[in-house]
Amino acid sequence: QVQLVESGGGLVQTGDSLRLSCAFSGRNFSTFAIGWFRQAPGKERDFVAAISRSGVGTNYADSVKGRFTISRDNAKNMVYLQMNSLKPEDTAVYSCAAKRSVGYSTYFSNYDYWGQGTQVTVSS
Image (cartoon, rainbow, N blue to C red; front, side, top):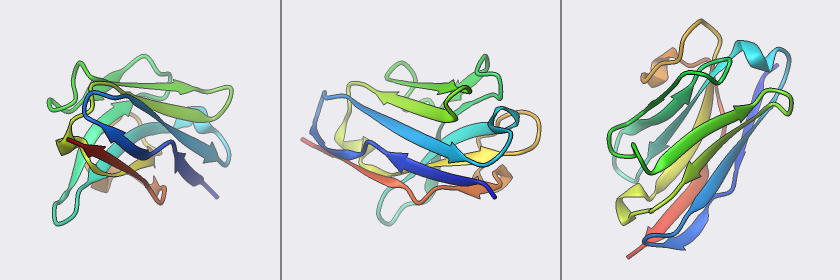
């Protein structure tokens, strides 16, 4: 059984940084692509970033490109989302998700397992 647990969220000011972590429990972590998504109140869930099984391939939403960096440590079953230059519009619940099949995706429906999420609030 796969479980994902996010951590690292919090309340920060505009321009600050946060690093979110996603802890994967279960077998064969390195066979899963991982994505980060976020959902603000009253809005749809949006793609943020994704990383391939090996960690070589990454993809970002235009809104976070150049500010956020996704990485993974397959030895530790961890995925990270480094968020720099945070803006109020980054405020949301951030969730990580695992995708069993080959290739990462920007579509949440393609992911098989989800964490509960961690709140990120950026004050102006």
